[in-house]
Structure formats: C-alpha cells, structure tokens
Image (cartoon, rainbow, N blue to C red; front, top):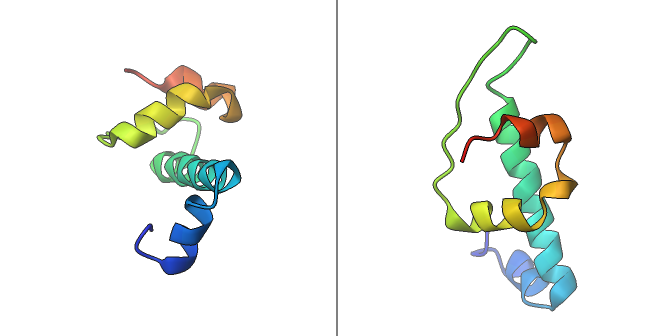
Length: 74
C-alpha cells in the first residue's frame, strides 16, 4: 500500500521503484484471479475495476503467463 512509508519511498525513488510497484501489483492480480480456479474443470470470473491495473496489464502483458492473457476478456 502506498500508505506504508517504505513502499511510498520505494515507488517514488525513480523508475526502478515504479517498476517494483507495478510488478508487485501484477503478481497480486495474477494470484487473486487464480484463487478462483482450483482444478482444470473449474471456472471463475474476476472483475478488475482499477484503471491502474488495466494500464499495467496493457503495458506489461508479456510479463504474465500466456494462458492467463488468453483468458482475459476486455
């Protein structure tokens, strides 16, 4: 959270800090959406309403697994 002093200092320390925060956000998003599906026969829907996540997904899509990218519906 940006409310945490350490996180805020990291994020605002330059491009590396911003990249760290973006990667952390994308990893959290990937984990969050994966918690719905526990087996190959499961099906689930996640709604992401955060514009910052959408922007990061578009900018860094190649950092995410292809199976996950293929499952996204915009």
